[in-house]
Amino acid sequence: MKTKYIHIILFLLLSVGTLSGQNTMASPVDLGSRSSSFSYTDTKNTSSYTNNYTGRSTNDVFYKFTITVPMDVIISHCGSAVTDTYVYLLNASGTQIAYNDDYSGEGKCSTTTQSYLKMTNLAAGTYYVVSEGYSQNGNITTAIQGTVQKVEYDLGSKSGSFTYTHTQNTASCGNSYQGQSSNDVFYKFTTTTAMDVIISHCGSAVSDTYVHL
Image 1 (cartoon, one colour):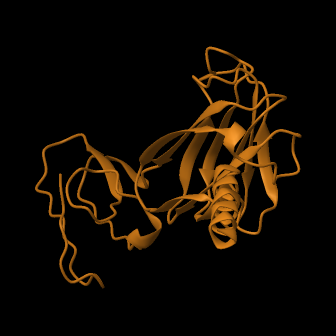
Image 2 (tube, rainbow, N blue to C red):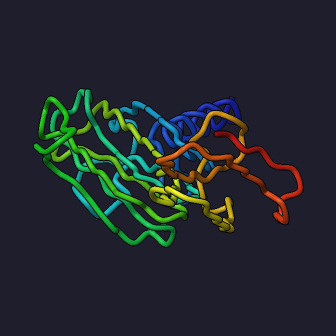
């Protein structure tokens, strides 16, 4: 009988440990690695978590994502049941690089005390997002959206014969064109007279390529 009680106590302790939501930098919600534009939304009840980040005294949830190319990244708590929230953006080593409390600018949530943070041209790397309430625990909806800025070169206006050659490593670009699943680079040119135009990838390190006009 004593052994049975011990098993019950251990089960209860393990259950409490699970409910407490030990979500930290070491055990975040991991969105994985992203090389193209993405959108992610998740709702967590912070009442089931613990206070691991030194921001507010409320409980918090950690998210992790990696981008392999520069992106514009928007993080928001729009539509959360908790009406006043905080969001923090940390780098790979856990250093805070940005945060937001209230926001009433472009793209704001309908409840302006819910956090909205936009990072323009965020460098490739691993990042952490911390979501928490200002003074209240409850359901917080965290939305993370990454948009790849297309790499584009403008050759300008051409009225006579011209030659242009350029080499771009597409590993540092994003997949903005819905052709292949690989990354792409854009070139723009304007002709003021009718011309024969030849476009080629001859001599490229990539042995199998696509070109779209």
